[in-house]
Image (cartoon, rainbow, N blue to C red; front, side, top):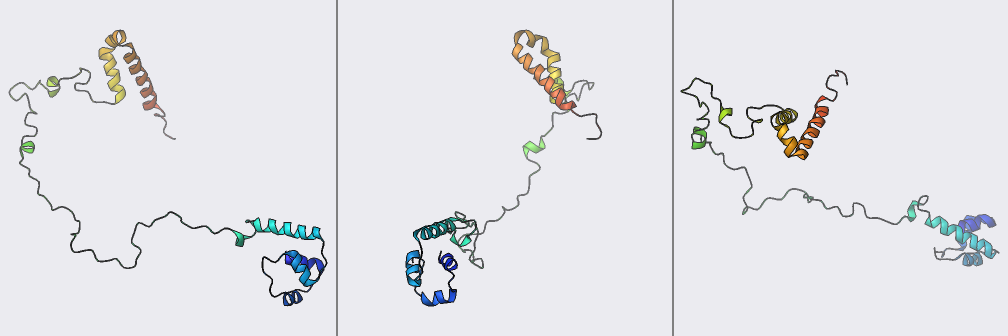
Length: 192
């Protein structure tokens, strides 16, 4: 603000500062003009005051007028930052791994594991474990993915489901249709 007044009236800067050693930021434009004995109009005072207000509020160009902000506000360090690590208290023992326990191989559960696997020891070998398992017939002795299992279920009891449980039958068919697309998507292409 003061510099713009000096430039407009063509004053020497050295002369200006020697004549006005007690100027502060609160010194008004009219007071500066009376000290320097420079005639100035009210419109010039208003223009300089307006330009200073705009200049002070512009934080993009003038970095010194930015309001100070705390950096890393709310961050708490979760580790020790006081130099060398302190000695641990001798009252509290250090946490360590449990003592190694030797496994017992002759416990009843391990010793008798698989004792009834060979069920047809005195027969001709035609009896298999799947013959003794209780459960749905489409799952006995079956090994495969979900789509193959559902196709097998439809094959075994599809007619019964269709008449007595139509919603369940519809959901099974829908799932088979989805899985068919899922398993066969881009299956035969060699270059992707």
